[in-house]
Image 1 (cartoon, helix red, strand yellow):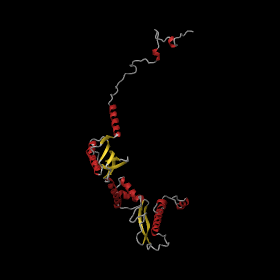
Image 2: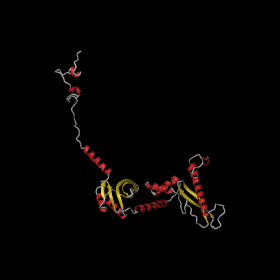
Image 3: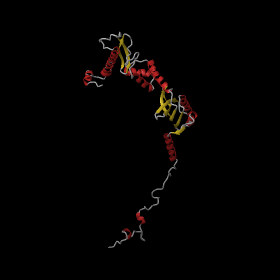
Image 4: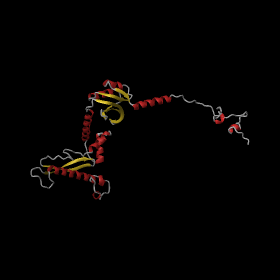
Length: 321
């Protein structure tokens, strides 16, 4: 949908400062409020089957029953909108559902700040400062808890019984915990399905990497339905191949080519660093023996005086006329 330039000029004819556009009573907020209320009126018209102030259907006793007010939290601040009602109470709006108190996009901003390690109090202050929206810490906790329920369902989902290739590795990331930034080990298991598609089987977090924790990871994968895998690509962690063979004894363990290359370069660097050091003193230039330069002139015959005869210099012809 393209907005006509004449309409934009009409909306911005009194524009002077950014506050006129994004402020408390700015154009953006008024447009959002007007469009939401217009869409709700269109939904009510579709629900009843006739326009406002129009002729209603004779077979239907349901009709409009005034409006109700609702305050929505959005990225542009709080919006107070009017929601139409019907006699039967059967109107179910789609744009702003019943008992909905925030627009789409507002929760994503809360989750983005929460993922960056901000506390509920910090998020509350940030929303108040940026969008002039007052939210309680309980509301923020409820938003994050809804996402955590989806995360738990993903973590416990059933898996395929067979994966031809299984990649396992551990990353060290920085996380905020108890007002401190510390290092944590994140365990990753990536499987390749029979169709050739990569699937992240799970993510686990621990204080550091160890074969004992990997054993618990493989046991959890087995409990979620994995029966076997053909090849397990791992790094050089001590005890990791034994942990895999404990749960999947028929799996072939293969060292990752990246880690193999790093190990090869490391051994080459150690070998090159073991070369003998150069001598501390060397003879001066005057003490060095003078060597005759090797050239084609050293191969030519010489007479008793040591000079090159003219016959040799001129291809066997004498220099006399």
